[in-house]
Image (cartoon, rainbow, N blue to C red; front, side, top):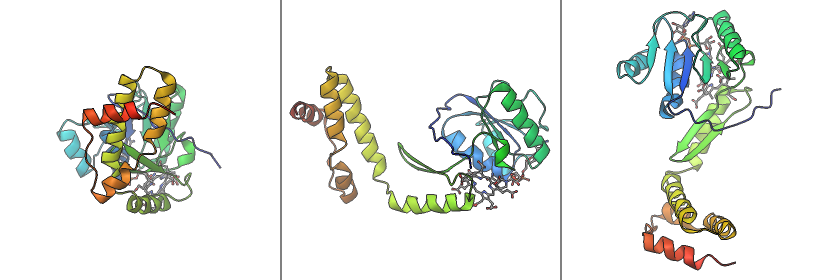
Length: 215
Ligand SMILES: C[C@@]1(CC(=O)O)C2=NC(=C\c3[nH]c(c(CCC(=O)O)c3CC(=O)O)Cc3[nH]c(c(CC(=O)O)c3CCC(=O)O)/C=C3\N/C(=C\2)[C@@H](CCC(=O)O)[C@]3(C)CC(=O)O)/[C@H]1CCC(=O)O
Ligand SMILES: NC(=O)c1ccc[n+]([C@@H]2O[C@H](COP(=O)([O-])OP(=O)(O)OC[C@H]3O[C@@H](n4cnc5c(N)ncnc54)[C@H](O)[C@@H]3O)[C@@H](O)[C@H]2O)c1
């Protein structure tokens, strides 16, 4: 069994190529577009949703079958055509170029697989069964969605703001590390859940930093 490594990849403005434009390509495209990838789809046909996205100029559609050379300039590749042999040829070209490739028809021909994804603002949860059961991955993802409410979005925005301020205002690495550890122990998430959270002004942030610099 492959033991896959989960990573968070920044694809903003980077070219990602999907071969095939059907239902699976559509599912793989959604998180790529959300993450700001420069998406290129090579396929003789495109699903309705993908056509609409192409018409808005949010992806580039190359309207023909795959040809070697289509992966030039990409950082990531998805072989999602309905033709197994074509997907294998795509995986071969990707391997030659040293590019990570996902193969929708038979995962073992590729080098990465796609998890179920759940987002709450800056929080991302990715769920994988290591390929054992894609439907189970979808089901587990929706169970976790029920556990993690909308409060995580403002909570993580708050943590981000405080972390940025601590890094800006506190020159000592030891004190900064202590403040950042204390940040994780604040009860703000519960306050947000209960609707009792009062947003911190810059004065409150500065005084919290001043009061918590010590041991
Ligand atoms: C999670 C999710 C993400 C996504 O695709 O975006 C995802 N598959 C999803 C849905 C889904 N997949 C399939 C159906 C039809 C019902 C069924 O057959 O079960 C449905 C629809 C459904 O269940 O709703 C069939 C299927 N899937 C794969 C194969 C081929 C094979 O096994 O090799 C076949 C058979 C094809 C055939 O027979 O022709 C392969 C993979 N699918 C994966 C991910 C990777 C492993 C993830 C893990 O670690 O578990 C992996 C290995 C590779 C990859 O695609 O990256 C997404 C749910 C997202 C969500 O809704 O939240
Ligand atoms: N990994 C997964 O999550 C998953 C889920 C379901 C199905 N599948 C598998 O993924 C594949 C695609 O499924 P789908 O539902 O999107 O099929 P689909 O028929 O909806 O789409 C296939 C697409 O591939 C395109 N295509 C065909 N030949 C091509 C070529 N030579 N070059 C470029 N594009 C080409 C078609 O025009 C079409 O747009 C199937 O092999 C299926 O077994 C994978």
